[in-house]
Every structure is written in structure tokens, then in C-alpha cells.
Amino acid sequence: MRPRNRRIMLALVLLTGLLGAGWLLSQNRVQAVGEQQYDLKLLQQVVERIRARYVDDMNEGEAIAAAIRGMLATLDPYTEFLEKKQNDEMKMMQIQGKYGGLGIKIQKQEDALVVVALFDDTPAYDVGLQTGDRIVGIEGRSTADIDVSQAADLLRGSPGTSVTISVSREGEAAAIDYTLTRAIITIPVVPYAGMLEGSVGYIKLNQFTEEASREVERALKHLGEQGARGYMLDLRGNPGGLLEQAVGVAGKFLEEGSLVVYTMGRPGTDQRSYHATDPFTLRDTPVVVLVDRYSASASEIVAGAIQDWDRGVVAGQPTFGKASVQQIFPMNEETALKITTARYYTPSGRLIQKTRASLKGPDPSNAARGDTDQAEQADEAERDTYETNTGRTVYGGGGITPDVEIAVPEYPHLIQALNNQSLFIQFASHYVSRNPDADLAAFDVTDEMIDAFRGFVEARSFEYTSTAEQTLNELEEIVRDRLDRPDRPDRPASTDVLASLADLRTKLNRQHELEYRRHRELLVARIGTEISAKLWGTAGRYAFATKHDPQIRASLEILEDEDRYRKLLGNGPEE
Image 1: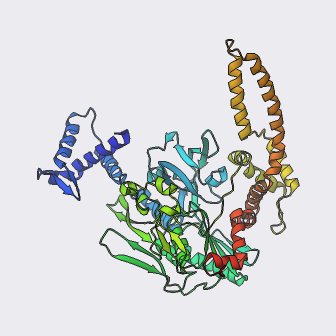
Image 2: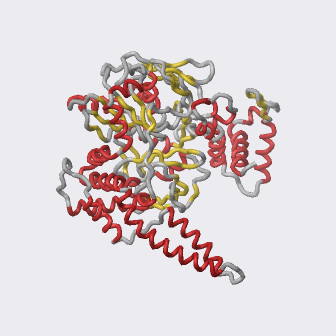
Image 3: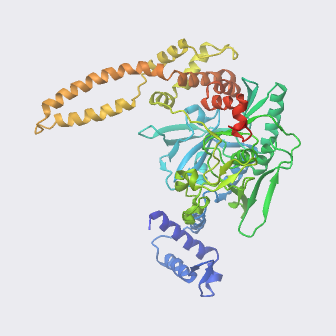
């Protein structure tokens, strides 16, 4: 048994002995629960032996808390034990969209704490954290054995206090350390709504707090007054929130009375259905819903309803796959339990939970733990199929599969290194200090600005190692090892190889010049976005970013091509 499992078993034993096993055990019997047998007398004996023989006094309060968490660890990742501070913070964040912390949303994925959402103009954003980063350490403590609640308790705190975290990032060999100063974080529900070319209204929705439906309606009306003839709802990075708000947002695009989602609890419990009831509805206007792998829960309810009713095109990347509903139950004045009480299903009957239970055939025994490995690898042929309103095939399990998948751009080592050292943000401050009166309407990133950025970076002794240079370093190490050993018969040849490698390094250094040219578009997007954020705030940042975001540009092409749009929804001409 692994150490973690031993700790869980010990904690459960302690909880049984301390909280109420006394009455049950007085019956001196084995209690059956379902198909399994639990020898409670044995548990009592173990507890008594620990009390009598354990070398130190036992902290019963800590043992109870550990026991509860150990028991919940056998359930899904979303069922949690909340102490008062955690409960208050969770309610404040989910309902009001405010908390004291860093400005990130984290989830437990494959035993790692992953940043799944990042909010603008926050401490996390300012130092250069990214979605997808894996937090491997907090104040020098490994995060391998802590859950989301414990991590949140360490990351959140009073404004003005600091916390140091270690981040593992794809493409980086070593962990990156950041020291962040906490602040009051107010999550903007709709941080930006604006017009794109082609009379397309764009809405970015961050989270489904209590104002989500109202804010989306306000944005839709405002864009409609500006002449919008199509809409793009951006749910990328949106981790979800209140179910009722998801129903309200979906209802802005569906016919009144349309089924948005239904939930099912334990076997034998009643089904509860949620329908579009809002009188404000965009009935026929083309819609694209943009999602990614961090779009979860309420985001998937909206995307799934719009997809099932063929009301709009879902574009982007497959979503996270969280189809469960949680409720908070107070235990006493200090604690509460957040429990998964139901799963939700899209109008076509899809369960999009990313677990083995949602697949045909595989053993579902690990589904309750949120095991996603097999679902991640499953192709469409292994997943249950359903039909949309017009008869299009959609799939259960594995999240929402977009109607059009749009690749996420890969960031080369140059861009990653510049970002990791916060050089885009630093250059933006440098530029704005010299150009405080720039015009938003006329602003663009020119070749001269890119040259100025390069000069700024080089003045700070910026260095990065490309993939080719990493390989070259490894080769040089092998060759030098041979030169250091007199018994090697190939030493002269190794000397020649080393000289050739030195010549190759010189040529690779010249390639750095070409790197800036090759990745010009990515540099333009990052430089322009940061400068726009400094000059014109969140609205400026989004206004510039929407012009250079490849997924937004691809979604715009869908809305501009009426025949393609209709065909994607099963309404196009027969071929």
C-alpha cells in the first residue's frame, strides 16, 4: 500500500473511533453497506491500540479533519470539506466574483494543480503566469499531496502579503519561481464586448457568477444597437459557476421553453429539468461559441445546449468534461461539505463527463475518482453517439467536441523565454512611458517597434536556448567526455567533431536574427496586447487581441461564410 493510502486508512479508522463508532461498535457486529462488509469492531480495536500505544499524544481535532478529507479523497475531485474561511471565500468567488488572492483559477488534474483560468490586471497576470502552468510548489512545499481547497487556502490571503510559488511549464526543463503580492481580485463577468469586422459582435464571458446572464444580455443589446448581424461568445478559460446562470445565458440564444439541461442525482431520485424562460432571445442571428480545454461545467452547459439545438456552431478545442453539480451543506458554524449531488445532461441526453463511465465497455470502477486517462485517449468510435435537433451526430463523454476544431498556436522557445522573463510586460511599460498619448484607433505594431523591442531585450542581456542549441549542448557534452578520457582511441576524431560543433554554434547564433522574423506575427500579438492593456486597460487589450487571435479569426471566417455556417448546422444544400 502506498503511503498516501496508508494515511487515508489510518484517518478513516480514527474518524470512526472518534465520531460515532462507539454506538455502532457496541453492537459488536459487522455492518454491511451495499455489497461490502465493514468490520467496525476491528476499527475500534485499532483506534484503542493507537490511543494506548502510539508514542505521542494524538491531536484528535487534526485526526478528524484528516479522516474526513481522507474519506472524501475516495470520491470525485469536486467533493470537498470546507472550513469556514474556505466556505466564505468560495461563496464570495462563485456568487460575487471577488476574493483576496492572485487572480488564478486552479483545478486538480492527474495529481497536479493546473492553472485553468487567468484574470487580467491581477498579480498572476502581471508576473506572466499562463493557463496550463502546473503549480508544483507553494512556499517551498510540494503540492503533490494537497488538494484544491488546501492549495487555495495557501494561495489566498490578505492583500499586500506575498506568496512564492514554483511552476512547471511545458517546454521548460526547470521549474520557474514567482513571488506574488496578493490583492483583492474582482473577476469581471464580461471583461470585453466589442465589434469585429463583418458586423460581428464579440463577447468574452469569464465566469458564471450571479451577474452573468444580466451582463451577457446587456452586451448583446449594446452590440445589437451597433448593428451586429452575428455574435461570437468566447467561453475559453471559463471554469463555470452557477447552473442557473448557465441556463440564463443559454436562454439568450434559444427559443423560450427550450430544454437547456437536466440533472439526475442518485439512482431513483427525481430528474430536474431547466428550460429557457428569458423573454430576450436572439432567434435567428448566426452564433459561434468559442471553447477550449479549460471551458468547464456551466460553459459546457451553454455550449452543449446551443450545439444540441443546432442554434450555433461550437468552435475551438474539446472542453474539460465536467458534468457534475455540487451543493454546499453546512455542518456546523465552522465547516461545510461541498458534495457532488447530481450529474447534468445536455438536451440530446449526453453525459459529457470525462470519465470511464461515459465510455462503452471499459471498467468504470475508477470513474468516481475522476479518472480521465482513458477518456482522453478515446476516439469518437468508442464514445456513445447522440443526435442534435437536425440529426447531426454528437458524442457523450470527453467533454463537448466542437463542430469545428481550431488548433491552438504553438509558442516557440523564443516567445516562451521572452514571456517567462516578463519582457513583453516590461517593454509595454517602457513604451507607454514614452508614448502616453497613443491613439487606440490608429495603433498597430510596426517593424520599427519590433526593432525597438529587440534593442530593449538585448540591453537586458536576454538569452534563450533553442531546441537545436539544446541538442548541440548535449552533443558537445558527449564529445568533451571522450576528450577527457585518455584511453579513448577516437580522441583525435572527437577533436575534429568538437571544432565542427563550434562552427555549427556560430551559425545557430545567426539564426536568432531569423527567429524574430519567422515569429513576427506572434511578437506583434504579444507586444501589441501588452501595450494596449497599459494604455487603454482591459478593453484595449481585448480590442487589439481579437485582431490577432488565430482562433477568433478562424471563427470569424465561419460567421462570414453563410453557406459553410448553414452546412455545419445540418441546414446546408445537399451535395
